[in-house]
Picture: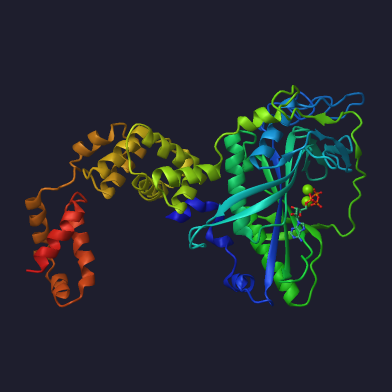
Length: 517
Ligand SMILES: Nc1ncnc2c1ncn2[C@@H]1O[C@H](COP(=O)(O)OP(=O)(O)OP(=O)(O)O)[C@@H](O)[C@H]1O
Ligand SMILES: [Mg+2]
Ligand SMILES: [Mg+2]
């Protein structure tokens, strides 16, 4: 069941057993894999980085284009203040050092979708450097227990996106809607060891960016794209030559591409070959990476300072005035995921696994916090009902948690009914199922109408257990002859016979007493 909550790392992408052995074995002769990510996150603004053109995703081709975006001579860039604010906020959330002064550079390319022939980026003095992010790695079914790790952020820079070239049969067409859309490039140090860690880092990054509202992280719209750099080396040796798999558009894809690359590189090295420093692409259909172009001859981007943009000065201290005040932004940061996980454990007694699952699934966290607001509920029970019963119902209906809006007041009521022994967890599941299927009545009404209240009356339960004993002579004989394992089966039959309404703690005692006679 937990696997449903971690769809980004489904089983197909797990490293093969052979590979896992070769990279986890501590002996000196085994391979160590190294992963470094570059993430392009679209800044969540209504207009572009240097022009007033809109950034909507679904606009018709070439309608979000200002004169500047198509490089009409004489047009000049005007920096969008909101992009700077969001860039700084992101840098602060990632514990980066925000630079009081940063500058813009031109990085030259010759592509049809960059009409100016260069991209404005921050190469020499970026907005921020030297960040650090601590996060939990936990893929149920793959890791037995979660572990905490950290990754350093080398730099965060502002830059423009390019346009898009669409290939027709005998011609290429250019759509400039994306040209000049604001991006933050986040360059992570090569501190990760595999695809699972990369997927966990991305999940954490997405949660942070969505909480602070600086990027929608809609990967299906290209709002977050990942380049995965991968190399392998033997323990004690310097880092190996890296390959860079570009523009991966899903968290699953990142985990899969890295897994595939590590596997591929180890196989080449084992057979005496060398890894080429090349750019590759992820083929999501065939689940392989394919070579695009080699990087051996380093491309000369002819970087030069952007002459039309002055250095960007930020106001750092509390009393300074300027376009963007870093101190004010630091104070406006909301609670971040690592803090939420700690709070859930400290205040509600959840275990680490539960806190990770709740923080990773926004709709779960909202339900959890909403249910607790008006009732005194046991946190662990509430989390269990969410992670097990609720997820189970959604899974059966093939629904993602984000597709369902469940009233947290109703959820709280169901948990309270379980907590006070009025219904069992199985009945709770039936009530959840009813409501998700569209029954608008409140939980207690649904329970009463269906006669789902728990049976706690001693005599009624004794009768129920006696009936099960009489109807299942064979199992009872097995039990009495010492095969006590079958007790569970008998207890299950009692639950079924009562249509899940019997109080199982009482039945456990009564059944044992009756069987010992
Ligand atoms: N040996 C290595 N193995 C795996 N990853 C590496 C290795 N060396 C560097 N990396 C990663 O490669 C990335 C380098 O990104 P950077 O932006 O500095 O350069 P680039 O990829 O050459 O430039 P571009 O922005 O044009 O793609 C970083 O994420 C870094 O962590
Ligand atoms: Mg880069
Ligand atoms: Mg790169």
